[in-house]
Length: 410
Image (tube, rainbow, N blue to C red):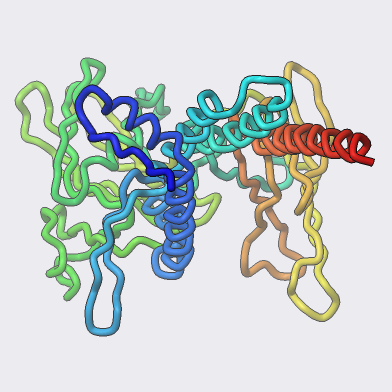
C-alpha cells in the first residue's frame, strides 16, 4: 500500500502551504457552509431587527459578534461575516482558476464559467461600497432632480441672508455623525463659519422629551430649554427612524456657547423641515437634520398617477406613474409601473408606493419612487450569461469527446 508523505510545516514552505490552503476545495466547502449558516441567522434576525440592520450585521460585516437566546441562557456567537466569507471565496476561486485548471483549449469552458462566478461575487462588493438607495415623492405637476436616502441623515448649516433666504449649505455627512454614537463626542470646525459645532449623544432614532416627563429619567443627555434627547429603539423599517443629536455651538469670538437639540422630525413626505436658528458673529444660520441627498443629472415630473384596486377590496391591482423626463431642453414621456422600472444613465426608478395612507376616494394621490444607483446593476445578469456560456462550452466539449470515444469503440 502506498503511503502518503507528510511534510513538516516550516517557515520555508509556509507560503506554499498557505497557497494550497487558499486553493483547496475544503476551504471552499467550509466557506459555503458558513455562508449558509450566516444567511439563515441573518434571515431569522430580520424578525427582531428588520432588513437593514440584519443586512449590516450579518452580510456586510467582516465579523459577527452576537448572542442567541436558548431558553434561559444566551449563547455568544463569534463568526466571520458575509463580507469576509465572500472575500475568501473570491480569492479561493481566483487562485484555483489560475493555478489548478489545466492550461489547454479543453479547459476554456471552466475558465469562462469561473470568471462568471467571480463577476457575480465582485458585483456584491461594488454594490456594498458604491450603491445608493433613496426615494423621491412627487405630487401631480411636481418635478424634482434629487432623491433622499432612506436611512442616512446629515446636518446642514445654512447661512441666511438679510432677505431671509438660505444660501449654500455646509454639510456634515452621515458617516461622520454615525461614528460618534451616544457616548462619544466630536467637534467640527471650518473657517467658513464663525463657530465650531460640538456633537454629542448621536442617535439614529431619538425624540426630544420634556424633563418633567417620567421617561426623561432614562436619558443622560444634557437639558436644553426644558427638554432632553431620549434615545429610542431602532425601527425595523429604517426609513421610520428620526435621527437626533445634542449640539453645542461655540462662537470663535469668545461669546457664550449655544446649546441645542437637533432632531429630524418625520412628518410625512411633504412635511416642511423645522430648522434650528441661531445668530452669532452678526450673522444668522439655520441648522437642520435632513436625509442625505443625491443629485440626479436630469429632472422627473409627475404628470399623472393611476391607481387601480381589485373589486370589493383595498388590495392594489396596479398603480403607475406617468412621468416626463426633462434633460438638455428635451422632454420624454414615460411610464413607471409596479414591475416595470425606468432606467436611465445608471439610475433606476421603481414604483415603490403611493399616498397619503388615509386618502379618501376624491383625494389627490402622490407617488413614491425608489431611486437606485448601482454601478454593478447589470453585473449579475452578465455573470449568469458568462457562467452559462462557460458551462455550455465545457459540457459540449465533454459530449464531443464522449461521442468520439463511442465511435472508435463501435
